[in-house]
Image (cartoon, rainbow, N blue to C red; front, top):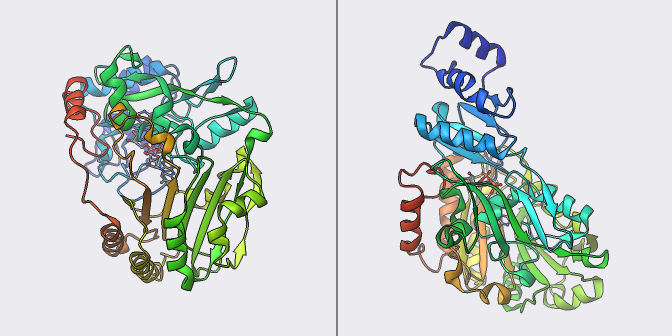
Length: 454
Ligand SMILES: Cc1cc2nc3c(=O)[nH]c(=O)nc-3n(C[C@H](O)[C@H](O)[C@H](O)COP(=O)(O)OP(=O)(O)OC[C@H]3O[C@@H](n4cnc5c(N)ncnc54)[C@H](O)[C@@H]3O)c2cc1C
């Protein structure tokens, strides 16, 4: 629930507390006790930054718009001392269903921690805990460097990194977690630490895969690469197929032998007229029409009805997914990792997708798939970080996207159906090492809003 400032001041003035949540003692406590400890006196608000999805959103009672690392420290200390549930927000794209802040909870908005800086020879980048993918790419592009980021501009750069970090460059550099050199982290005890493989090997291991469960990363230093204009080029775009080609497209993707410079995406999505369509999106780093067509010849052989592929610079690589970044509406996510693309399974997925997509307000629903060359990623031992999915060949996501929550139950049925169709194994084994590190660094589970790991 959002409060107007007039309501807030009336609240503060009268000291009234309404059970409806229209006024909040929490806000008053923060104004009195926390605000003086922050770097500015206007950082407490009741307006939460927009999230990618309104489904199971945290809906906090109060927001602290931190501007410095010390603001994060002061807020975490305040919350843990006062038993206030809290959550950090970066890009706002997390689709966990475990957020449960409510009006007594506090959101730490990291957006102002958006610095992106490079060392002199651009082999290292330090990314602020609130920097989005687009902000990171734009600053890297201006600096003449390539940085591993996710493929959607709205995602938090470190939000994605802390969960593993998939991106167009991972065929060459591995997962983002493999490129992390150090992290500045506020842990549950309210301390700020510089965590490296040498300083805190356990915590360094656990943060890379389960970061949101263990602290707030105010910044992280990763490997980067100096880049020339030529190094910034990629060939990418959409190949649109008629629906009867679905099985052939799926089989072609199963048979593709990706190289470190190539990535393939598959989308079941509505076109601009709302008609469901099959879209394969190839990507080739430093590619052009000739090399791209050769690398993805098996898809071209199926006769796409439209082809938007072109050579684009680094700061436009993600433009194709900007529509996916739209804020708001209801978008529960159903993800599955698997080893093989099976045409008959995708026909069943198509049928389920078309049936759900037809419902009122659900036209933007999609099923997305991505596959990367994993040679580099697999050269790093699975035991090197808490990230568990190093060997998964394909990742798919069913995203029921609808404007009215009355479709919640049908959306869950659709999403679970797609996930069940795709899953070759049911869930991952619990990670005991991660659980014991979690117990040591966060015994009271104050970082409790993300997928449960205990
Ligand atoms: C449209 C879309 C596109 C995506 N594309 C990609 C992609 O290309 N590659 C990829 O790897 N993943 C991708 N993802 C998955 C995405 O990385 C995760 O959902 C990630 O958790 C989102 O991070 P965020 O900062 O945007 O979200 P938030 O909701 O702000 O954060 C998600 C969780 O991470 C925590 N968190 C965020 N920043 C920090 C921090 N600095 N310190 C500690 N905890 C933090 C939050 O507290 C929260 O628990 C995508 C997701 C969506 C919805």
